[in-house]
Image 1 (cartoon, rainbow, N blue to C red):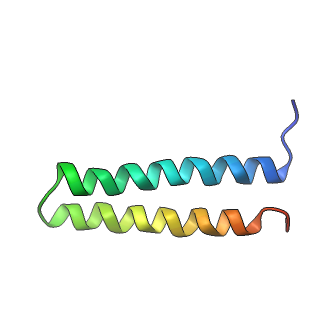
Image 2: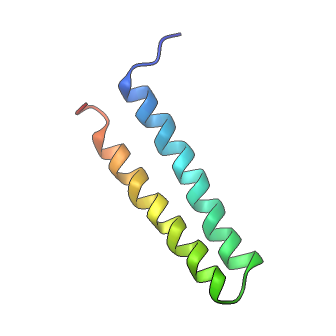
Length: 60
């Protein structure tokens, strides 16, 4: 099974969404103080990068 560039970008998008969700949930559930805001902000950053990866599919 060969993976082309679009398949790699799709997998990277999927993994980044999972990591972003886990960081947001970690910030919301585990850390209820100021550190939770940092985890949530990094999770939203992962969503932004995953969005860029998704937009690049088909163009690379």
